[in-house]
Image (cartoon, rainbow, N blue to C red; front, top):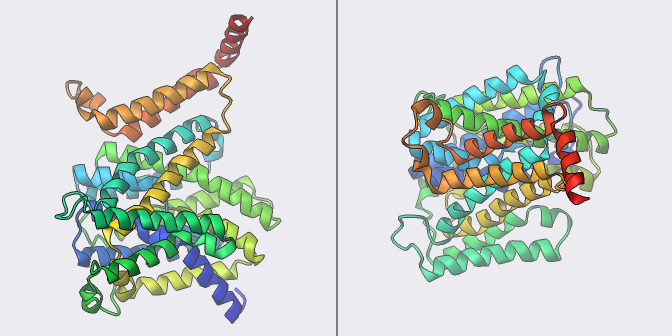
Length: 435
């Protein structure tokens, strides 16, 4: 690695700022939903920043076993937020980390053959799963916009106005700004919203004063991991969706940097993500994936060297050892977070719909895959007791709307698009019907 200049460090800092909102929103939302104490939340944010840095360094450091060697930043995938909240609420926070660790190991094990499995996860499958995940997150955002479920001031007008104000700021920044400002519009919206909330007396600065300047890291901070099969299946599905999303990031960066991305490169990239997720599980952080928002920054700055990503990863690691930084983040009122979350979660739904835009819906089978998978996912989410009388072996597959919808999409895709002759017969029948 060559000597890094001030310019390299400054562009690295820009990469950190571009992904910072996404990086800290995940622990804030998950920690808030699981009712963590301020001290636990501060730790969660700190360790998330640190492991984001470690994961990024693992990915950019190309070697024989892992690392794609492209200027890519890693952060927690938003598709994991809803599943983690659901797992934590039902089985406890230790089940989240058990599922993350196992799903990370599975990713490492399948990394070399995943390119051969991609046909089982076309856009009609991944788009359906991502859309289901996004739709199940929207109620979380609305609860936060009202002040947080169970809070004494839930639904207070000032909470709702503040939340929609933050959302308006984010929308206006996206409409009337370009470049880097537009890239960090959510971060700016959160900062402005928090400053307004402070003037309204809604921010407690005591938590920052109580936080330490430096702290160590603690493996299994929240307790030893526990392993629940449904939770593991859920997080493995999330990991597979993340790998497919990351593939697009890798190929885009390969195009931008004029580097051919081989099958071995992809396997190394997948393996790095799996290792990063295992590390996240051990240190009670999160599963990590390639962040697409940083791809735009590579193109915007025109700086394609890996050194800026080494700098960005190092900055994240340093920030992770400073609880004061994490404590400042915890000052964000729930309503402010809710306004920003609505935009972020809505984007998850939008991204799912964008993925579905690649699907040939003239094929009746694809319409059924989408209809049944989203219907199953939302149905199980809204009426979770529908399978309560079934044997445990069946119930375990349908306790999560994401698992139920995801498995439905995979099975129907195999039926309509993989089994030899099935699609051809369907097309012939459709042509006859049309005639």
